[in-house]
Image (cartoon, rainbow, N blue to C red; front, side, top):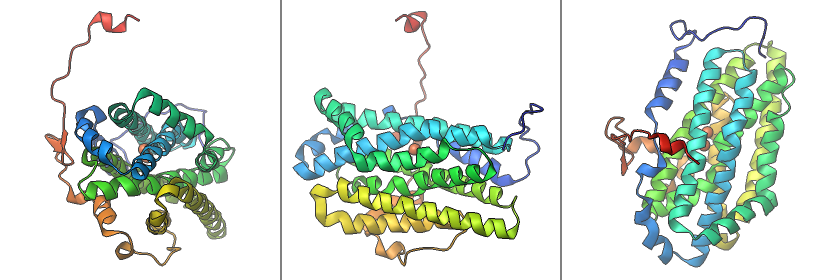
Length: 324
Ligand SMILES: [Fe+2]
Ligand SMILES: [Fe+2]
């Protein structure tokens, strides 16, 4: 927990672990904006999608919007409570990306859906009990940081959000993009996925650093608590998957395998053993290929992903921009 007696400035010339530098650099290099991806190219494809796939796709994007909206501020609860200034800085940087993620779904909605439909989807976000439950379960951990144990558990909650809660949603867009459908929207999902993977690794590392502050017995106790929370989140996510894919019932088992694979990955990021006997080969290969972000072209100075073109021309701001 933070000590407020003396205000200290961050000194990047004196880092105690090079992984902080790696996280900061990697996240900065991954900078992207949704308006630079031509989602319009997906418009015709979206109209031709099967009705149930189309509806599920819309609900998926809606659920993901809520997660990124909450995580934009949620991650800062942890940033406020850690005393390590590098962790604080990196979490602040991550938060900015959550904000970009949340906006990127609106970019897709605006291109593909009518205003009336967008309003219906945002009502669905508020009325869907399974979705609300999974977000509130994590938020409760963020809002209950009173000591170091709570801070560790809040980090695990954040790790769950980053490493588990997005993946039922990522499944269908990755599958469709792999089949050549909704490719540009899929590319946005891929860029988000790449950020979330970095966040999972980063927050997992911070949580492990936190654990080192305790003696062996307390470490074991907290690891058990962490595992308990991860399995709670898995069960909530499983339930949400069943609700989300109600109209695509045949996919539910496959989505849950993908979620289990990500639960294992999340446990690994925390230095814990896998829970499920599921590995890469058990996940749908098309989805798995979408997950392998390393296979995409990511050149910081020209393109990111298959269609991402970095903005090189930045318009100057006129005074009248600020007139409302
Ligand atoms: Fe995000
Ligand atoms: Fe994230």
